[in-house]
Length: 228
Image (cartoon, rainbow, N blue to C red):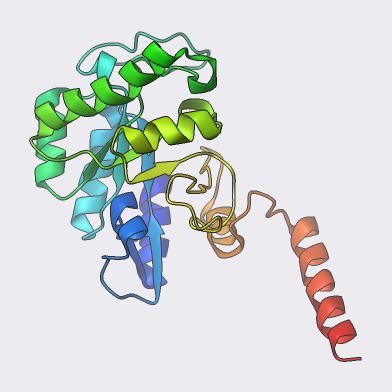
């Protein structure tokens, strides 16, 4: 949590406004020099510490929650999964009341491209309905589990009524000009404030110093050759 505090303080110090995914997609966020949409997947209870840190700084974020495991240990099997429960409906409702966005991450954390039509429909529609019932607000955003999607999944997400959806390809969030293909950067436990800052600036995970030197050299060469 110490590194999260440092990273949030960096964003505040650099003048970033932290907005929800839906606000970013709709263009309704307040004007700021820079904007960033912070997201959390799955919805583990230890995320409540992050809620407190965000709230203290007047920042908002989006949580993509697996609706089939609300309030209990996650039902899906993944190595390295935290040994804890997911947030309860009451906790999600309190978060939404505090200005945090609650989005869907399916019912069962399914790999959507592998789902048949009936399961795909249920994963998207049932999770949305469950979360809306829990928080008493519309659920407008979605994140593809494991970052996996195809055109069939994307169309199913659209049909289910979501207005924004995130995958895990890196780059500027709205690079593809498609609200159902929002790009994201992953912040890892080992990321320092410096690597975090470089990721934000370059919208990339390739932020080691050797890569930065190559990047600068390439930009200088491009500018020099354009001038000829």
